[in-house]
Length: 471
Image 1 (cartoon, helix red, strand yellow):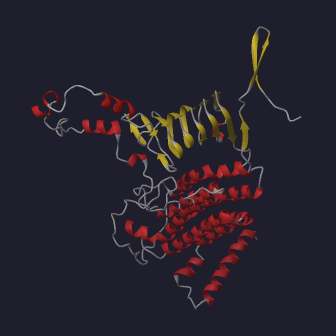
Image 2: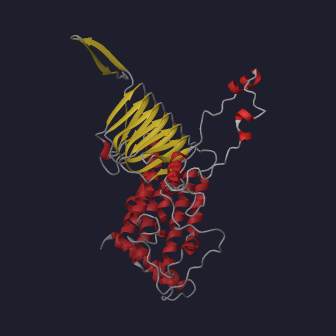
Image 3: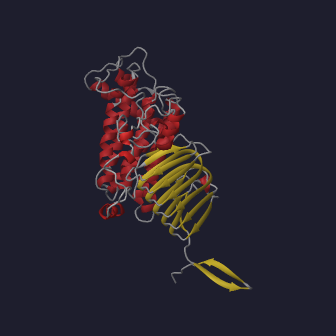
């Protein structure tokens, strides 16, 4: 008999024995029935196989890595309890669902607090683990009108942002500590293939609520509840936080987009203007002599009317160009309502992360510092100009990536983008990371040359990269 099947049967028998001994619980109770439910047994197998592996790796590391791994384990325990309750509870309202999922939400909030404040040496571990917990929100899917992706797609999309930090762990400790590499690989396998395959097998259309069970208790009304208790694609502070980042399509339009919307609304353009009377005109005002004093001239020269760094922007202009400007310390920026005819221009951002979900025509990253950009597909090119310490990850395909006048650039390529043409000019410290041959293989890191040798031969100059030998 298959060894895995034997372990599952032994696990089910042990749970039944514990229930029967601990207080005379009858087999008709929901907890006892859930012990034999195939979906609960499969979820226990998921925890034993995948979560157990990452916990074992974390125990070898200790410290904050072990602490955040325990939170991951606690989150999966909370989801198991919710899966059991779902089989005994009728489908709640939206406000009732938020209260029902509160135990899972509290665990995620506790994990998020570990990533706040002063950045530790294991920040990438913390972010990867905490951001991955967003995948557990598949349980909040209530139908196609709730605003979430289907459960399987939600798990895959949620892992993408966590993978950004998980890859950093793999690169940092690849040749330093095998325990950290094992931890990062085990964390990914929890979700891909672990949780994804579990949801695909048991809940591809979302959780199945009881038709005759008890009614979930709604939370007392404190504020208008959201239209759908779902987390955004990027890792939020909690599942139902009022400060979670909004998708770009749901934000109120600003700048020129708002101006054109108002013009096209059909309302009179001059409806909100005030009438200028004669005494308000400059030529009739006694306090305006038309003579500029020397003191006023000095004040105008010394105090400009604008600041060097303008207000932060994330908006679609003229329906063709996404503008992301002056974002500082924002790790949860998302552009999810885009198409192949639109371009993305990122300017003056610092210590932020932007995820572009969908195919766009062109991406330009200009004058950014410590900026991370994750995109799916680009039609024309991705350009990095005048930047310092940026990281760009291509999850789909990109014909061309150009790096100009940049110091420090990490390029992560997917298997679909290995044929990308990379052009560099006046740049240094450029590293390209490519996936390994197998699913468990390490990422391969390649440094692009920044020194060249030019030799005059046969009537022309021959240029070759300079290579340094350790001999």
